Length: 388
Ligand SMILES: *Cc1c(COP(=O)(O)O)cnc(C)c1O
Image 1 (cartoon, helix red, strand yellow):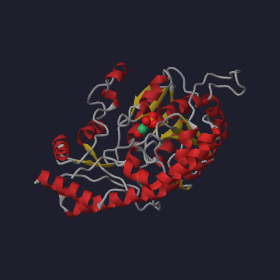
Image 2 (cartoon, protein in one colour):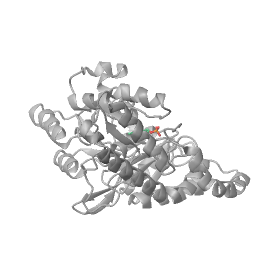
Image 3 (cartoon, rainbow, N blue to C red):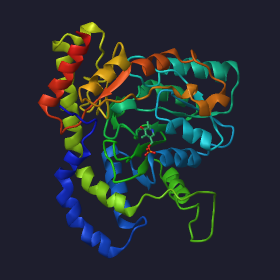
Image 4 (spheres, rainbow, N blue to C red):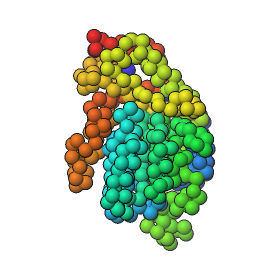
């Protein structure tokens, strides 16, 4: 058996015809920069996320940078985030000359811990009078929302901006006091990545910033085109952060399938959950992903961008799976506070015990709607064999 980590070729067959039907018209138009396709995609994605505005940009990483810029984050400002995320979350902060301030995670969900955030903000702001803290970037890791109710209570208390990093969580729901919201619809803005392997992937790079704030949306659009309203007259320092019209056209086709793909992932996850239980693997120390908001009145409590187990002797298990033809991945093997490029921030190993423990135990298994039951059984069987 040979089970790829993700099978985009199989997925492509489902919508190939729709792309090929639209391509001649698109090419005949020769309109590649912003325009109608981008505008329509922005509206359609905003509708999916339950926000008023969407601003298409060049990548998820750029979506983070342009969001920080639009919120006025400047050199030496401090932005709080998790050390257990993809590099870009903290990289974006540093790229602007601002300073990432890391906060440990919840060991069950791997998301930013509201309790640790409370401790951190109390210590920094109330005890040390740190007035440089301006924003928080909660990351909805693997497809499950952070505990936004508790996080937003804290950010409101201290007057901090919130950028939701929803690169892995398009379409995930969360129950707030004001009703059910989608990832990206709870902070000042939220960002998506259209990197090909994400749940909604382009044929290259792309991203989007979503917001309910019309002024912020205007700023984002301005910054996206070098800060110019009238061509060759510049109001503010922006950059080229545009989403290609070609990617927008492709994403508009794929967006119509997103619901089905999310449902497929959730079904596969439920199957894994059940089989890990039945096989007794959960009694041998293997932990399946905790869907903590299941039953909170939302149907999409977790959209499983990744199905991540926590496994004893993780590296040996991964090698064993590789040997048997089962691909897997580690998101993420080294926390951000331990990365060489962030050495000047002055952190050391031991600073964020939960994040560091997670980095040593997590293993992402193949998950996509196109997987077969045979493939999932083979994976469970191989893991059973490993633990004897
Ligand atoms: C993928 C990802 C990004 C960056 O997205 P790109 O489109 O690859 O630049 C940012 N944050 C998280 C959590 C991601 O998973």
